[in-house]
Length: 169
Image (cartoon, rainbow, N blue to C red; front, side, top):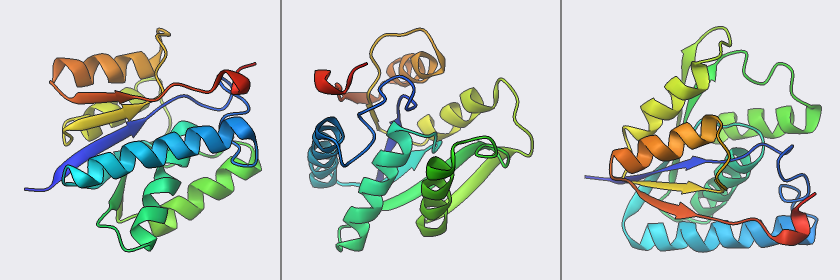
C-alpha cells in the first residue's frame, strides 16, 4: 500500500517573506521542505495531499510537483474546500494555484461555495488518507491548529518546519 503525506500550513499574511523563493527566508523554507520531502520519499511515501491554501500549501505542492517532474515517485492530490476558494486571492497566488491544479494527479472539491467549515472538512478528508503531516504550524489557535490536533489524534507522524526568523515580520 502506498504511504501518504498531508501538507498543510500558514498563509502568506503570517510569514510574509517566507513564501517568496527569491528571498533568503523563502529559499531557506523551500530547502527545508525539499529535505523533508526527500526523507519521506525514502520512507516510501508516494502520494501527497493538500488543501492548496496560499502560502505553505502551494509552496509545498510546487516542491512535490518539481520532484515528480524530476522522475521521483511523487503524486500530488488536492482536496479543496470549495470551487470558489481562490476567487478573492491576489493574482500571483491565483496564478500559482491554477498552475498547481493543472499539474496535480487529482483534485476534489468539498463544496461549490465557501463556508466557514469548508477548510476543516478538507483537512479532515486529506488527513484521513495520510500517514504523515508536514506543516509550519507554530502554535496559534486557528484552522491549522485543528488540522495538527486532528493529525496527532489519528496518530500521524508530524514533521514541523519552522520559519527562518529572517522571514518574520
